[in-house]
Amino acid sequence: MERYGMPLPWVGLVVALAVLLQQAISILQGGGESFPFAIWQIAVMALGLTSLALILMPRRRLAFALGFLFCAGLLGWAFWLQYGEGLEPCPLCMFQRLVFVVIGVIFLVGTFHQPGRVGAWIYALLLLVAAGVGAGLAGRQVWLQSLPKDQVPACGMGLSYMMDTMPFFDVISRVLEGTGECAEKAWVFLGLSIAGWTLAIFVAIAFIGIALVRKD
Image (cartoon, rainbow, N blue to C red; front, side, top):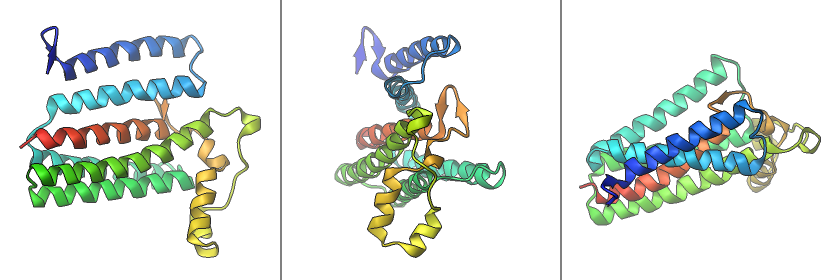
């Protein structure tokens, strides 16, 4: 589909780059600390990532394989930050890692399955559900990171300790409440924290899964 002679993915990429430039100027001038601004910045980044993926997207089987490798690379990078750089993940981060594992498995199964149009829709729905859960977790963390320091929750128990001492659904409830560790921005790139980037990636994966239905 094209608009004014230019394919829509290219339009999305150009718009995302233009808005990111404007946001970079705003950040340099001291703006960009509120939650709405963070969500706007993440939405623009998600648009850019989705548009770039649509421009470069190969046939379905190869795209599934690349999706698996992408998730594996993200997990490898997360473990490097943890064990190489000493950035300990908070409980919300651990749950988001688990979602990336699920998404990676979906991509891996799709690589060997070689689904047709109906099967591709099933994989798209699975990716949409998994990415939606991940986006909810990441969005919660982005909100915690936008809170004023006097409103940030206190630091809590580690995830492994909670799993050993609390019922499973109580652990989920406690993790979703968030803790002081979840509000920390230990790593920032282009104005986005790790949670901001993962939220943008989850949104992009949801759209990419649907776009793969048309890639025979």
